[in-house]
Image (cartoon, rainbow, N blue to C red; front, side):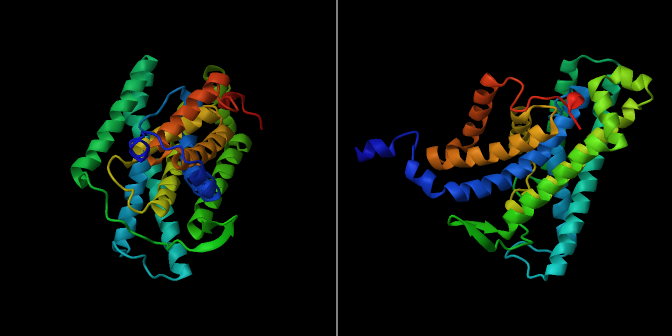
Length: 329
């Protein structure tokens, strides 16, 4: 009987699931916040262009490398957590965020100019855009592979995880709080910008009816560039939070699986819906952590995609299912 249990290909461990329920919830919300920030880039571009920008995952990892190089330039070394004062830590974080956001935002704009704009001018079919996005993703990956190699960068630890309080026995650390709160604030700012600003109205107008929006004086190319820029900036912020959560995660293909999960989160919440991206990201992060405890660590990623299939069977447009062009203020 014991041998049969050891040879089992699935570990249905209800006890572990219950024991780690709150711990997995906290960790899941942190990971889900990162997924949601990246998912916003997917959902914005899809809402405006009806394009799945699969190269967005590499925009994310470009920001991660930018933040990593900034930390190296400031003198941080691999090994134990740096001993820095609170003012120094805040300064490091702000600089990392600025570098990652600028690099990711600029990379997203360059990607749109080089890869997608020439195709739009030639009225290329949708399939050509999709193939180009996949190709651009692999090109950026291989550039990092050639220049940095296949191994992850040595971990640079800026903040030591420290318990701030507990929830039903689950540790809530300073990194959990920073990642979740900062990500939520950024998502609220992005939502307010799209729904309440003049530029945001232009984005929604192009998403709803690009021809009419152009006739009304909206510069469609400027809106498209702005959309890629916003998505890239948010991906850069997500890269910094990811480095705080997983210091050893900066590697040439580190954005691939994370990008697919973020795209899954966008579809789960309702592709083209900003608030749906937030909901989908948080839900995905929590559920995959639950699945890891209940079924075993190797099932973590499988649970995420099974959840997507189940939700889409009953809600084909996602949980919220409202497009950017129809979003209500």
